[in-house]
Image 1 (tube, rainbow, N blue to C red):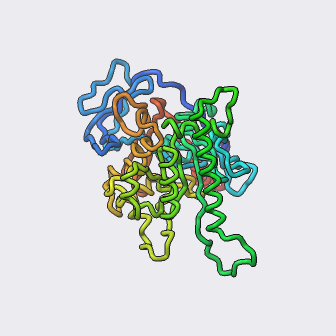
Image 2 (image 1 turned 90 degrees about the horizontal axis):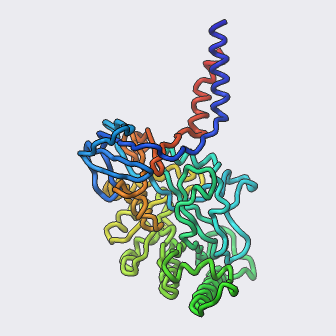
Image 3 (image 1 turned 135 degrees about the vertical axis):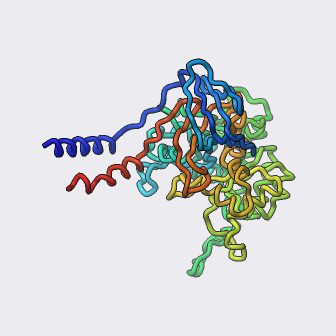
Length: 431
């Protein structure tokens, strides 16, 4: 009888855990010190046998001789590696739950020019995807709207919050633009009679977008009053005073050149998103201070004549040219979980490990305008920290032991772990 009672208790426990809800952690209540760790600062430095102290959500000390404050919680990380929390610089997190279920998607709006759309107000903090990112070391994400020519504004969120107001880390920091492909799409079928020229149609769409940006700049330069506010023009005013960046989805050289010219015309700080061909014009990007977010390294090149491993080599080529770049994981299947491993792949193709780490931490923070608060383990910054058994860039050895967001130790339970645990015991319970 005792045996069956234990089995019944275990079954009930597993059923409960499968439905378990992970709650956001409360504010940090006392000082914490992580000791005896290999600390990867995020700016290229590695500190051996070092400690990190943080209090009230902020890092207060980093180094080999950090003495724990009275009453501090001590985390012994002997043999472990400590990194800044990883940053997913492109994501539809909280806007798309299940790709193929339309009712769970709130990522795009009708129309071509929607700069007034704000991704943050649609962000769902209860997404089951969020916790699967945290257990892979991702603590912050840039949530990006999609659709049309001007898709809207993105915001950076931290991934442990009750609602979007709690989650927001940087509000409406980017205006996102998607350029037409400007080339005929490959097809085995002949073009239909009277079909529009895709290049001509694309250039006409770009002209409409540029006209809008010119008008918006002129509108704000004219000194309008609040009573005359135009919602669409008001949404992009930060492009003209430097408080927002222009994120342009561009992969081909033609698209990138158009984006650079458009940004120069309105005086905006430009970030190329995608950037498959960015290595071809790296010197131009460096000369104009243009940053790049490489959306997916694990992919094929866009041109038949390119080396098959070109996407893997691009990060090292941008690094050599001195272009500020970040690595993202915009794969609709992995939902961003492979971010660290995309960076790890770049190590095999020319980047050093610390350069690859920067591409998913400090570089991403610089591009998103949050480097003053996060991206590296430095005094005064938020305590966004992960403790890892193994190398965070290596899929075989990376295991996240602990994670802290603004000093709060977060729960690393996720749906994948719950299902794994449930089915690990499935046949034991049926004996």
